[in-house]
Image 1 (tube, rainbow, N blue to C red):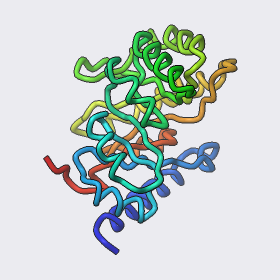
Image 2: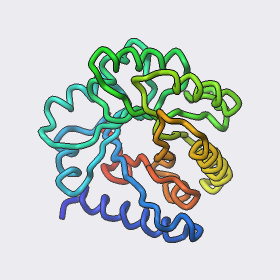
Image 3: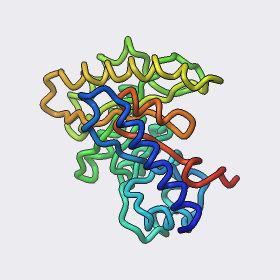
Length: 232
């Protein structure tokens, strides 16, 4: 067992332990692991996939395209980084799920790009719950407007929400934010939206994924804990 596989097994164990610490109603819900491969090479990606990874996350379109062509493995592709509207055509061509839709302008650009290739693009809406200026994402009070916009775009399918917690010195400080995001997610699931299929709450990264799972995340984005420090 190589180092990547050892780390992967540890992350999977930690996710399972966190899931068992949930309140009873959430214990049965599985958690999907997105292995974040930013700044890691194709060889490392192949080792992770061969060890059981089924979904990978990339932050940048250009880096992902080169890897996509070279990987030679069947895997789900998730765009987890900020998406510029001028990259929408590439995004819909290569990615199964885009986590980072955060404006009506971007949603319309992705819808148009998806229409051009006859695709129904799965998306998440990125919520900036902490209102950090350094992070992308829509504020909570603007979320309903973006949801309404997305529902009018026939080439998009809303699948849920994504958030990134602040990098608090004490990771426990993330817990209230994750708890609130889970409440927003359940409110979204309760809406009558014929064009949506609300399944995913994407939150939690290497430093806070166990807390995110405890608070209801069913999709986590983990890179360093699997691959080690990024190669710059």
